[in-house]
Image 1 (cartoon, rainbow, N blue to C red):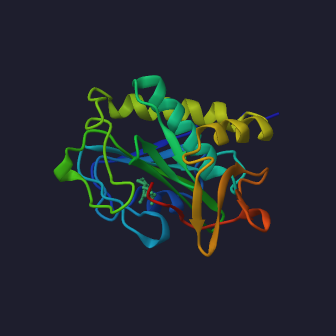
Image 2: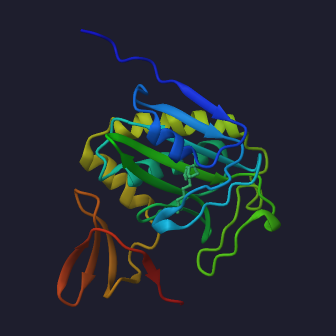
Length: 231
Ligand code: BTN
């Protein structure tokens, strides 16, 4: 039996997008990483951009991790939440499907992409941003670990902790890991709107779809933005 080749790393002082580079890395051993100090065209979900100022955040992409692609965003979010909680006193939650939330602020995000048989999990975490470094967001305003009081997190330490947690989380049985994800999910029990559907957020089903309890019963949601109503 041949052993898996060791993961490799490409690091750039400056690059357009680590996801863009990672998607071109067709012969990368599983779990290889592309990282950067600065991204000039960081990509966010739904065609948005991801602000990536130099030396302020952790910007990296994991190539072909051994995980069900449909669950990758959720399970990577759980791994990020676990890692940040291990390194800081902060309590982290995951807003389905890809936002990393702390005290109602967005501190990180995940973008999964695939191209020509390469699957990539891209992760951005705001670490040392000051308020003026952050983009303006109307809901779930952006923040950073530093602003929220965890001001001594080293980028490489956080990267290593997330990598270890991804390995641990991806190895868990599906029902265990989805129960853990649901317990970390932001807004469970609250009334939310996703597209035209309105219902009480219940958690996720066995395929990672959002579950809403509506007036017509329990409805799974495959994709969309979860909107909360002001309380
Ligand atoms: C989102 O919240 O919309 C997802 C943001 C994902 C940002 C990361 S930063 C590293 C990787 N490279 C990119 O271009 N995007 C992801």
